[in-house]
Length: 421
Image (tube, rainbow, N blue to C red; front, side, top):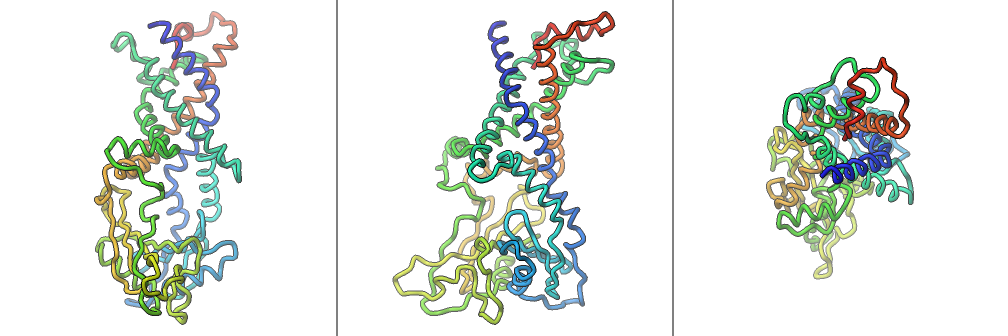
């Protein structure tokens, strides 16, 4: 048993040294990612609201607002639009990855592009977390490195638990791992920090790394579905990403204005808190009102009898107040010509595999449990940074020991004889 323990210890130490830097990067960026939503909301609080001209003031068509955003931006094309139920809320137009523009829904005034500096930093932070901010062909390499490092981190957490496991469950044996001790220096301090942080962070770190495995590897994601008795999906896109087809009209028919489609979707959820329409990767969302409200899938709006598989429905994603789970949403797909609801899908409609997969996605950032979950995930991620630091320090002292003086604490000498996790 002692030999097996030593083998695990040396594997723990060597792979920890080999992947420690990447693990530290992923842990530190994970702290920021946990509060990304709150940081953006705080930084953009001023442009998220407008002054209501008068009670019941008319709003401009969504198509016109998107066109205003398009005209104001030369660095991207609209990819989505989000409206909110509050009369004083501005309309958010997404302009590709991580970039937005806010528009006054009553005047069409472009209020700004939000906190561009913060959004740029957060986007870089996410890319650093996912693939070490590599670009082009190197992105796949970066993703492979972070995926493997996350898997190693999971092994380090489990092997650390094995190495920590007390031979005797007594308070004296467990005390060095339960809380920080004052007055320690050098190896004794690092050993105490490593074990205490590891002890309290372990449950959360296992959840974070295991969910990271599911995000990183398709086989791990498929395993979630297989274990729950469900067939893995062919694609791993977000809910509502798969297009819903509706019959093509039998004659040339104008598409319904976006406001009409959004309003129809909102009728299915009286407690909606936001409504988002994806605009087909930057395609023209609906033209101007003078163009009859032609939408992003303009091709096929003139039906051909017996010769078409249909056209893509317009899918509106609704966030609902007080929804459970907190991350749940409703996807409402509508016929863009008639405005009829073709399909509705909520979290309750998911099979058990997709439910578990979605939980794991949002447990990875702590969002599944709200602000408290995000705080716990952030603290554990920060703990990961200190685990790497103390692990490196302990390894350095093991491989490059210095001569002890008589003034060093006895606790340090005692720690030197104990393999550490």
